[in-house]
View (cartoon, rainbow, N blue to C red):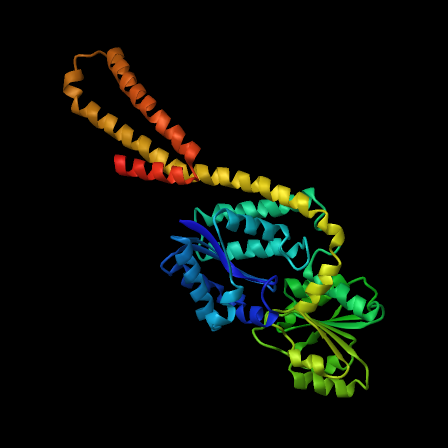
Length: 419
């Protein structure tokens, strides 16, 4: 059995492929059920964010699990395997656990040390728990990953200053425009990313924050919290003609602003330029809109480049974060090893206890002449002998757990004692 992680992330895959591979939140229950119905996958968690799509699984065999997950990606997203297989990353056992710990710590994010990813890991785990696709292997691994993420942010300064994709997006807009003072900004989307955009803007000197969302009540709530103004999503063209910056991050599965929509808007703006920052994956704005005169369109690829320029100071923290991950990985392996050996050791001792009790029953008539104290002496003698015989195999099993030798010893015990 292997812990496996298979997926794509921002480090090695073009945005146009990553956005095609995204799994929407509403599709997660079906996706998780599909994964765990496959031959080699026993447990599964799907982590789908704007920067990655990864499946963490407990699989019968690494190669079988890898193939099952690759096929799952192709069938679920309707993307041909040859379009993404070269970008697919696969890790197993300790390397898979280390990767999850690094993800939870923010080391694997576009914005180094970002805080949002920790919540996304928790939500992915909780979604799998709700669908009963996690169990005794992935549950403790994800629980430990959240502990690692919290410890990293407490004991290091990896999350200082710009600590989210939303903050980075606003900072990128400020850089492009030389500041956002007295600018009118429209935020589309009120999910965690969208609200993060609005929060990052709040108090930054903008003249007005407009908030649009498919669900009107959500737009009203976010706008009220941030002293903004809610607007109807179907009135976007009207407001686009009046604003200076559009920040968008919805969960839509296809573009919500076509090239033609923005082309019409720009005719009304009378040569006033419009900055569009689209951090949704899949993208909210047709990439072709960036070719329209007066439109500057920035997406996650631009954000990656911007974030890379601004993380030099926090790079000094990487060594400390990696030391914490190594320490926690050792702790996790020790705990995991104990969990894996415990059932076999318990089974061995239960087997010995059962045999002992059976033999006492078989010789009950021959022990009738013994008084209570004599009977206790005999029972203690037999139990002590059995305990001493089992002590050495038990110690050797625990010491060798997690190694090839440990697997051989475990298999021998199962065969010898019919466990």
